[in-house]
Image (tube, rainbow, N blue to C red; front, side, top):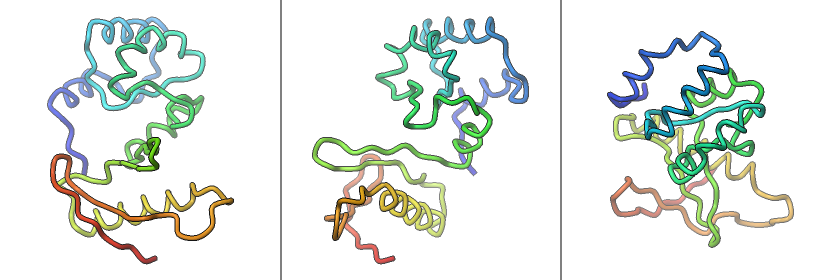
Length: 157
């Protein structure tokens, strides 16, 4: 069970998750974001709404909230995207030096759940491996808390 912040719970209470909002509601949300109300963890948009979302791109981009088709947050199937996010879909990408970072759990998760998440993450990385790369895809793997020291580990499938 994920733990939501107090602010997130308040926003969730104010929204009807089954309702399809109108364009004027979406514009109102853009205006709230422009005022600095970033009380959400992810932003999902349809392609036709990206013109509106682009207006607040300077606020959403630095926070990592800007919808992106590569990450599945710009889609015509918003329902599936939201279901995937609620099921724990994570975003990951590598930096210039090939280091991949991703959040794989929270301190409230059980050891078994964390191990399952790590295995799933490693499998996703292996599935994303380009076919031209042969041999070992990982040089080393390290796990750490947000501000804690890294611990190197090995993983055999």
